[in-house]
Length: 238
Image (cartoon, rainbow, N blue to C red; front, side, top):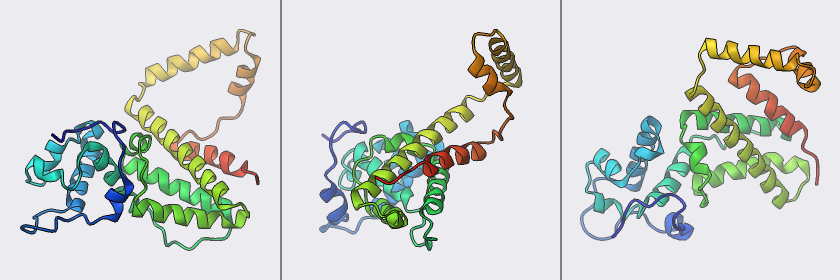
C-alpha cells in the first residue's frame, strides 16, 4: 500500500516522473492535476516546513481522497522532486547574459538565494533532490551558457554550477538557521565581551588581529555578497 515515504528512502525514476503523461487516460476528467497538487504541497511547506507535507495534508488542501493522489505522486520523495522543480520555475532563464561570466554567475547566485529565502524548505530539499525536471534543466542551461566564455568544457562548467549551488544552499541554510535562533541583545553583548577577553589573553594573536580589523557590514545581503565574490573571483581555469 502506498505511504508517505521519507525523501531519499527510494529512488525516483526520472523517465516515469518527467517524460510520461501525468494525467489519467481513462475515466472521468480529474478535478485536479499534478500541478495543483504540487502547488498545494509548496504552500504547505512555505507555511509550515517540509515536515507538514504529507499526502494526507496535501489531499485535504485540494479536496481529494488520499489514494487518488498516488497516481500523480506515489510517495513523498516524488512529491518533493515535483516541488523543487515547481519553484525552480520562478528562476528567470531568458534574461540576456552580459558575456562577463563572473558577473553573470554572481547574478545567478543572487537569484538562487532569493528563491531559497522565499521557500525556506528548499535548501534541505536540495540535499536529496536527484532528478532535475524541466524548470531545473532550463536554469542549468542558462547557467552553462553564462559559463561558456570561460572556455571550459561542458563537464567543468557543470561542476562549477554544482559548486555554486552547493555554496548558496549551505549559506542560505545557515542564514535561515541564524534568523530562526536570533540572539537577544544581551546575549550578543555577552558574546562580544567574551571574545574581547579571549583576544586580550595573549594566547590568540590571530584572533586579536581579526577582531581589531575594521568591521565589515554584517547584513545578510552584504555577508552573502562578500562570500560569493571570494568564491567566484577565485575560480580559475582547469
